[in-house]
Image (cartoon, rainbow, N blue to C red; front, side, top):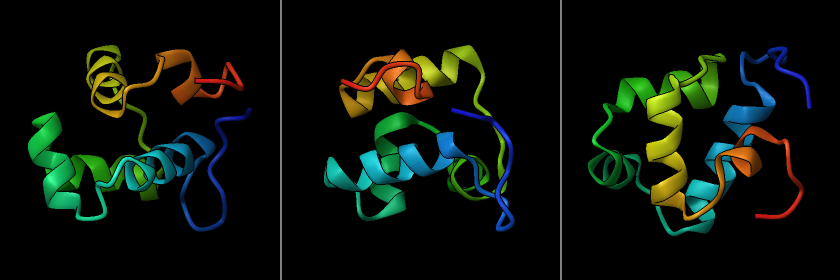
Length: 79
């Protein structure tokens, strides 16, 4: 899986994060931000503008989404 941004600014990581967030029932970004402790700007930057999280942030995201960091990064096919 590549890290290149798409024409809309998103990345495969951002797309995977958004899909998993919604699959886990976090349709409202505010609810997800409360669960992770991150700002809406931070999550939006990751999901829509190609920003990548720090390792610490990646671990928090994976824990909240109940998946591995490798899966979230696209290094594994199965959670």
